Structure formats: C-alpha cells, structure tokens
Image (tube, rainbow, N blue to C red; front, side):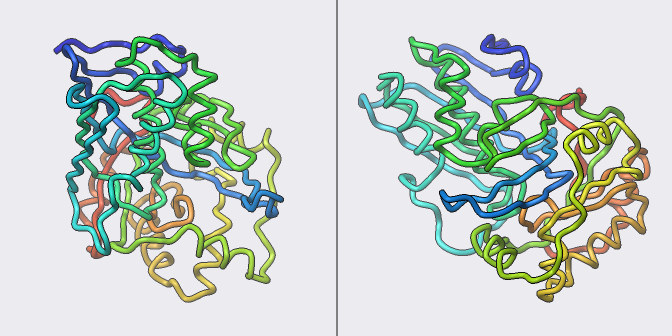
Length: 319
C-alpha cells in the first residue's frame, strides 16, 4: 500500500503526515497530546471555561481503519483495546467516532456504508485527548473517502461541534490554544526532546475536575502572557514557566499519587514534569533520550503503564 499525502493544508500535512490507502480501505493514525501548560480562566455563559494552553502532539496513539462497504448510511464500529478498561463499554452511538461520521454525513451528503476498526492505545479519562484525536482523524479520513472534499474551514466547524480539543488535531504538532479550545495557533514543536508518559491506572472525570476547580478557594498560579508562553517553547524545558491549574487543586484534595509520580520523574532526570489536561496521566520531558529510556526502565511501577514517546512533528519513528 502506498502512503497518500493529504493536500488540504500544509500544516495538516505536517500534523498527520499520511494516510495508508488501498482501494476502498484507508488507515489513519490518531496521535495523543499532552498539555505542557494549562491555565483555566472563568466560566463562560455557555457553561465552558476559557483556557490558555500549550498543546503538543505525540508520536504514539490510536489507529483507525476505514473500509467502505455495507448498506448505505450504515456505520459499524469495532473497537480493540491495548489495555484493560473499567466500567461500561461505550455504545457505538455514543462513540465520538460515530458522532463524527454523523456530522460529516450531514454536512457532505456522503452516505457510503462504513466498517471502522478503532485500535485504542490511549486510555479513556487520561488527559491525552484520545477521543478528540479519533474524532479529528475520522473527519480527515472521510474527507479522503468521499467524492466531495470539504475545505479545512468546514472541517474545523465540525471539529468545534465535536469537542473542545478536536480542532487542535486538525492543526500542527504544537499549538497555543485558547477560548474553550476552538482558537488554535500552530507553533513550531520543540526538537530533540523525549516524553515519558505515566498513566496511573485510573481515569479522571473532566466534568468533576472542573467542578472541583470552580469550588476551590486557592489562588491560581501566576498568569503568563501569550508571548511569554509561546517564546518559552523554544527554550530549555528546565526553564519553562508552564503549569497546570488542576494540579494544586488535586493535590489539596488528597490525590497524592500525582505528587509521587511527578517527583519520581524529576528524580529520574526529567527536565520538566507535569500533569496533562485534567488528569490522570503525568509526563516528563527529557532533553536526553538515553536518560528518558533509563527512566522508563527504573520507574517504580505505578499500576497503569509507562511509555517513551516523542513530539510528533519531529519524529521519524511512527507508531
């Protein structure tokens, strides 16, 4: 099978890079992300919160395979999981991939029957944007499979309807994100860095996390200007002024495991360590890949999983 470059936008080419396509079948990667910085502002009239964040896409994540076939208008989704999941299985009609298909069909008129296999590596409730990335990948894949290719602006509108993080995954490998997540300013991703992800084996409910943040009486971390945040990305991770507003709230509420995991990452040589999104994954950024590899080997088992990955825009490895 040949690799097919997508031609919607040069930034998207850099971001997703490729599809694998043959006849009526198409494979696409849906990478995870981390929030290097996450400042949560006030609640908006629509119930969302304004935020400012630095997103970084990673060379690790989910994969989707789309196969055209079956009755017109039907969509069958099969999901496989790399890690055990707790709780009820997500019903197909509640799956964000199914929602993305429905929105794309309504906008484009594309009604070809679909069989979709979703290979999940990104855990639910991990702060890694798995569902959002799957949704964006679905929009891009369907745009290639349909006879009518929607412009990138139309895909972005659909992405906003699907979720706050989805627009980022139509962008580049790094971005300054603001508003409720719909304002995405692509940035140049840092080079020569390694990222160690530590998933502690439990999920973090986003709605509850925001409720806890709203109820918390502690002062938020010092706010930084957009210019300071963006310029810092080109500097050394040890000098990054980034923080996550959820972290001190979780620590005050007794979630001490985050303190332990971040402390262990720093002890093992991470130049920068933080929590991604509203949890539950912690991560360490390393300037030396060898140190990062040794950290993975030496890390005290956390009950979930730990893996070494890299910023997507500058990776040559593929997953």
